[in-house]
Image 1 (cartoon, rainbow, N blue to C red):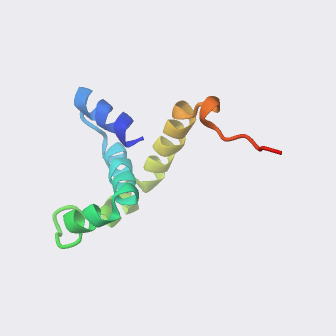
Image 2 (image 1 turned 60 degrees about the vertical axis):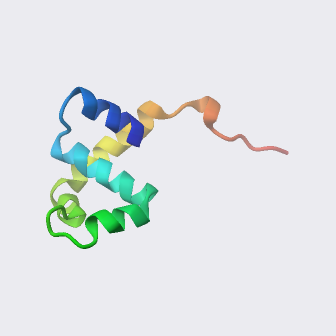
Length: 79
């Protein structure tokens, strides 16, 4: 998902809710790097973005999951 958002950001500016989703995914994927970026600064507060834009970011995340899902990559049960 991060790659899809980065590709989009190269073509057009991200909305605040899309940026919120990008931060959320970055924090999940790279917690140590996120801590060093966001931990000691008041300039960019991920929690503040979540409070304001989190609901719309949830919608973006659900839409991206739906669009990026490929049944061929889904594990199947084995007997």
